[in-house]
Image (cartoon, rainbow, N blue to C red; front, side):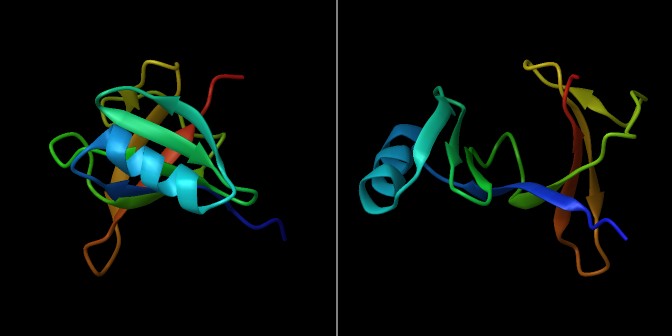
Length: 100
């Protein structure tokens, strides 16, 4: 059985640049992207997204290449699509598919 793949973990931060600098100065990781609204850091085994409270809930994302566009999905600026689901304890999980 092939296991699902955790794509990223997203944490809410107050200041994207400040948080990005903090992580990059303390850990062996690299910046993939950043702007005023979010940042993305690559570790060896996972991505860490730094998000603003007003834009995203704290969550983790699971890759699903079978996800199809619908009224419940959102198209992102990189062309990926995703939707959020809530687990039985109220945690947010993003289901995501990237452009091929």
